[in-house]
Figure 1: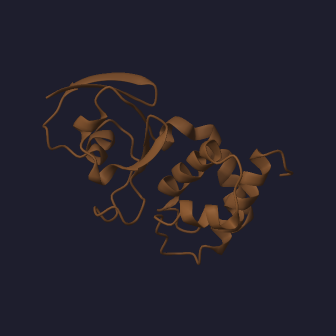
Figure 2: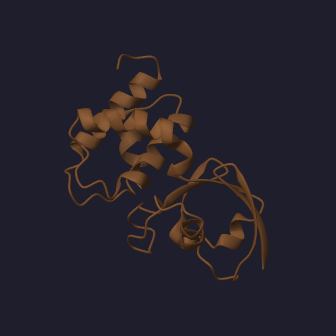
Length: 154
């Protein structure tokens, strides 16, 4: 099956098997930040953006991305680094395995939420599994980052 899509701004035209998961396809193109965790849409490790919206790539076929713009963490390095400083400050960066999917959702949140409450943050991140933390450091980092992006202090 012929597809045409953009991964991190780069046009790719390719021939794929119709049943290729998007997760496997983007990894084959060098986007190793997109990770396999559960393959049941429960952990968030495979989060990437299709046309600026976060999706779980383990349950989306690559064929569904035909004509779309795919963004992975590799395409958002500066923003990811900026948020990473907030994670480090709160001591929320332990093993780091869940970070790429988590960061993809946080950066999408910055774009999508004009105003936010604690409940909005919790609801938005409910699908991100972290086996190392108690989530409070991550929550504080997200809240501080969103406040900063809305004009607050660093």
